[in-house]
Image 1 (cartoon, chains in turn yellow, cyan):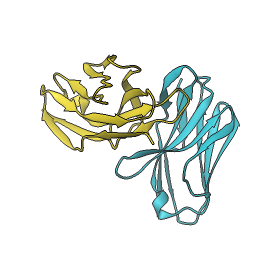
Image 2 (image 1 turned 180 degrees about the horizontal axis):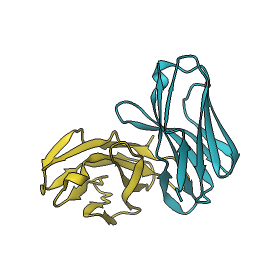
Image 3 (image 1 turned 120 degrees about the horizontal axis):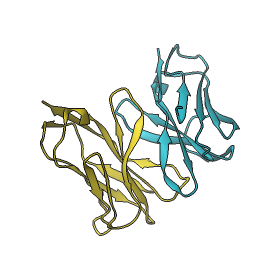
Length: 112
Length: 112
């Protein structure tokens, strides 16, 4: 079945540091790819998405590019802030109306 | 207006009890899901409902029974609660033509 692998955390960075969280996937078809974020004590929010190869999703300074050749969707941000501290989940779905398959989540802590 | 709401937000109960969690959405989406997030933050699909019909039932104990009285509501009833049921349960919605899903704030269930 489909699966998502993301780097183990926790990741601790200083404010304004560069962030990369690696995510690779295995899927039989052409999935849509997502990054969701979970702030402490809250539910999941969609951070960004990409639906086809070479698409770049971006939001709030975060970016991720759908790389079909390497089956990857790495999350990047050039300068993190304390408010970015959260758990980040990479996920995929084969098609609309099917459940999301999640990676195990990566906890990011940003210190001032 | 909250798009996807869940009640209660917190639920503390004794082993062996029966409890229900409710989910309501005002997005007009035709598919609703229950996900379970364990203590290590891992998210996994439990059930999926499309137009009030169960379309996916992952390997979940039959003590868990979802019920959808209408398209806007999906409830989760749990019989004979066990310690291992302690988790955060998320309701989510989706619809045809839209890849992403929208999550409720979660219900933290603690079984003592």
